[in-house]
Picture 1: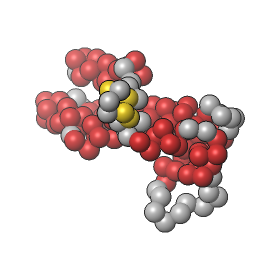
Picture 2 (picture 1 turned 90 degrees about the vertical axis):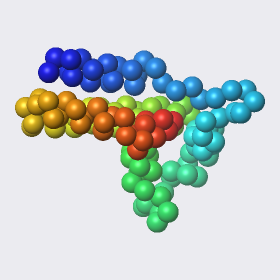
Picture 3 (picture 1 turned 60 degrees about the vertical axis):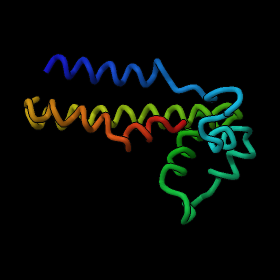
Length: 131
């Protein structure tokens, strides 16, 4: 149980302490072009996230980003901070879910075998790789 708890703490700490770089290399450019477009300036951010309702092709994250941005003061620098807060909050919820499942299963060997598989799942890696 202590090893698993330590691993979960390290996972959460690495999310904050070792973020992915914005650029892969100078020749390849950005990992994901949309992120830098969204945070380029306040006007771009408002174009993508300034809706009062959620447009059909978007998802709930656009509204959550907007709420976080408003809570941070909606200045020129807050769009990038809103994405960082969203990623941090999602990581905290994810770790809380892992701890909750492990606790519910009484930190059994079965839980200790399958929870790391959840962390290594491609869907998880892709989500936390998004800027």
